[in-house]
Length: 354
Image 1 (cartoon, helix red, strand yellow):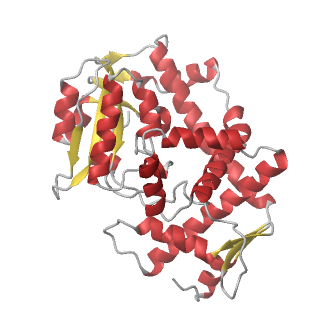
Image 2 (cartoon, rainbow, N blue to C red):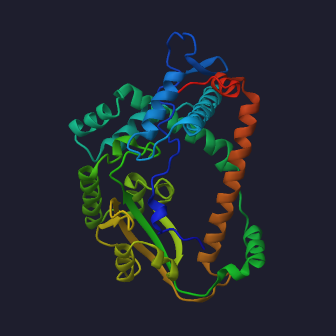
Image 3 (cartoon, rainbow, N blue to C red):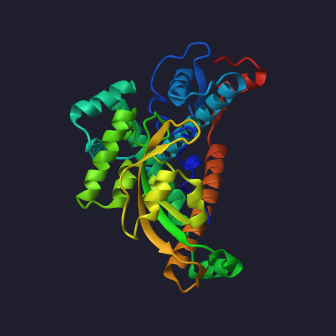
């Protein structure tokens, strides 16, 4: 069982997010070292990489320079190349997201905000509405491709589940009470990995307003899982409705005291008040969360006949196979594409500049 409620769970990751690709491939005339890579004839420019690099490091207290900065730029360029390859494949297969799909997603993203608030978010990120819609189209298109090429091919049989249980039976012998938790988490910090940038709180005041808006909608009877999917800024759990999995009772001692005390008071099906999460070392604000107790399991052996055991195994096997297929799919795509990474070449030559 994994521990999901520790403070590290809600730390801001330094990763390349889905905002990557918004401006890649825009038409402009290259000059000198302007081109970072070429993907099947489509150019990715150094200016694109630099824009995402600056977005990535904004709001970070860490100083990034030298080899670390170059490595981050290489990672960003790798994501841009991958996205461009996926978009080319989608175009060949006629799977580009339609205008209707883009507009529906845009309406969903804008729903919690007034037009003025939404426009202010775009202005703050230096993104026009057309550029934002272009990113939505890219994101929706990539989802389509990955579903067709990866997700739809994953099949976990009853025999697979039985075999896993028989091999890992001890994993289901619980030595202590388990808490099945979900949460909705909002931070006051910029984070380019958050899928919907217009939903992303950028400061403490916005984070407080956003979490209170979510709480109000919960109190009005809206579904916790749906709200977590739409508004949680925990990129690892939002896609699964905020599900944190089962957490042993001992793991609660590793999380912040406010969350621990709130969970202890919940009954299955209940959710907590808004919890303010502080860094115990620095006493600085980390974010705000609402935690829901989905189930509470006493110690003891869980049998294969338990539907929850079957569901947990099925989910774990699907996740493993999905990660494996995605990695293989990426390798095949890159192998089939004609990619020239000029920036990587200059790194090897020792002449790449920030």
